[in-house]
Amino acid sequence: MSAKPIPVSPIDDAQARKPGMSRAQKLLFFVTAWLICLMPFLFWWNTWFGRKLSDQQLTVYLHDTKKPRHIQQALVQVGERITRQDASAKNWYPELVRLAADPVEEVRNTDAWVMGQDTAGAGFHEALLKLLSDPSPMVRGNAALSLVRFGDASGRLQILALLQPAQIASPESGRIVDADRPGTAIHQGGMIAKLEYGQKQIAEIRSPIPGRIRSVAGTGANVASGAKVAVVDPANEQVWEALRALYLIGQLDDLPSIRPYERDVPDVSNDVRQQATETEQAIRKRSGS
Image (cartoon, rainbow, N blue to C red; front, side):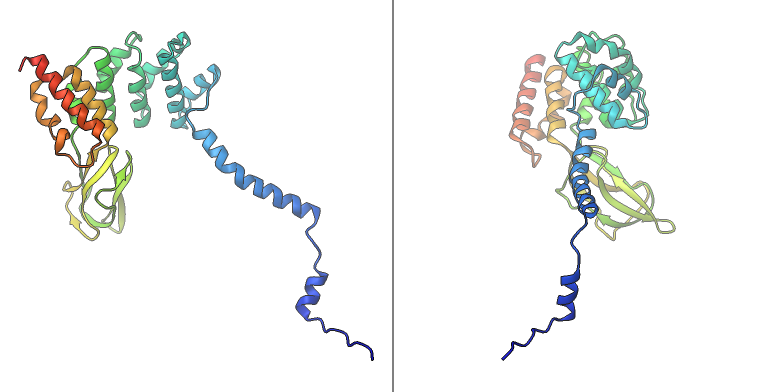
């Protein structure tokens, strides 16, 4: 008795006839997978400030107005050369003075920090004094901190301001359509809330400082133009730097701004609390009280 043939379904028959991937298809698949893996690395490589730049690249990056992060990267590396006492850093000192007037806030902020690394830098002191009236509170604060290295207490009020929470006002009258939660950590420029105003227009309300949201108007709240929308407490790093500067130049009148960080302000690190205590002690010792 002969065996009956096993019936083949149309699906099985189609799969049996389906050819494998051609060499060109395999190559295309491999290249695509490789690019998917490569692109995150290229993004990191192009944005990582630690990648060492040559002298020629430093000069090019310091003039790259289309990519402010390139300018920042170059500034950071000039600052590193200064701290290593690398004499070549002086080649770019005129650029540092020029960039103090750059239209990009992040560039001016980084520049203010770098100029504080060499108190003998030609033009640095004068440039930093001008930055004390910068429209950005972070740039003013960084300039004031750098001036302390020059033995200049001109920025004392700006340093005190670094200890204060940011009070953020509504740019228009409207309704909050989205808001972050109190207690959320936020970076400088981070979005806190969205405001709907006018004819369904949306304004993004962002934090001028890094820190933590203390309070924010809830979703659905109606707010008037100029009304307080949010309060952001300054980040621990910012407070610590300000307290270290006040350790050297602080006055008795500054103690009400310092004492809350010794015990009252929540979510403050032990290092900040210790620095606040030491700063108060140094001020009292200096004033003889």
